[in-house]
Image 1 (spheres, helix red, strand yellow):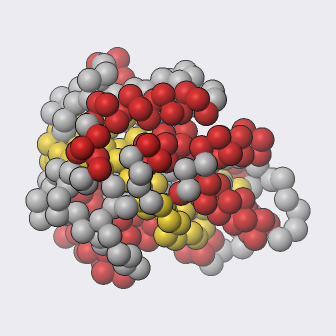
Image 2: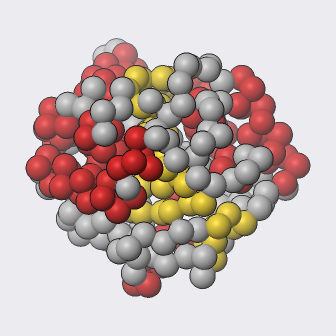
Image 3: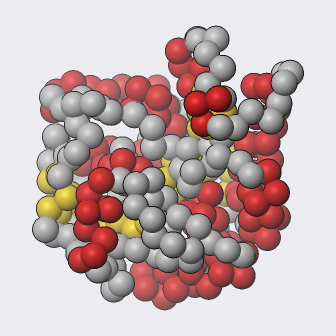
Amino acid sequence: MIRKAQYAGSWYPADPHSLKSLVEESIAQATRFDGAYRFAVLPHAGLFYSKDGIAPFFASDLSKVRRIVIISPSHYANLGHNVLASAPLTGCETPLATLTAQDLSFADQRYFSAVQSEHALEMILPYIAALKQPPVVSLAMVSHISDAARVHVIAKRLIAELGETELTEGHTVVVASSDFTHYGPRFGYTPYHSQVHQRVKDDDLALSTMLSEGRIEEAHAFCASHNNTVCGCSASLVVASMALQTAATGRVASYYTSSDITHSTDPNFVAYSTILWS
């Protein structure tokens, strides 16, 4: 049960040398922060866009990490509300190496095709494979959580599943895979008619700060009231709640948009926020 590298050659280089260079160069250029990180929210666009948001996590000290759990939204399969889904896997293929996978207790074969097709699970895997001693990986998806109370319940379930000691000591780390606001006619989201980039940035940084500070109820209400297009909002809420429940300290490490990368005047753009908890 190997998850194939479905997006190699399209969303990032399939050539191992080119991919390793991309990963290593982005880590070398990343802003470094003190501390080893236990939880994170990282972007999942094609690596041309998301590498600058992923790299700060991998520029930190990961020497104690034995397992990385990635939680993403489901872009292609309808999971329903309040469903935490995973599939049985023995490994995850990347152009650099095939990572060893460790199943979660709720892994179900019914979700294998959803896990296989989900790009939000894949973009972080090459960075893990580039580590000198890659930890095992576990993959899960959650798309919509109906209320903040359920966020805390799902987070508590995962803490019990993964082991609170493993989490607090940094042997297991949990990453939410999420891009932030998708703005423009292409995404059906155009609430602003002036100072668009600044107002989107204000929204995204407000939400990012709520998440980093463990203000789960406010963050859930913010996502609902703004009808926003933060695709991994539920995954981010779960990881923020896990960080809160294990007394981790968060910070917003970076924020930028696809327009900052391309210098384009296209009215359609996607935003990326990196949140790290130590």
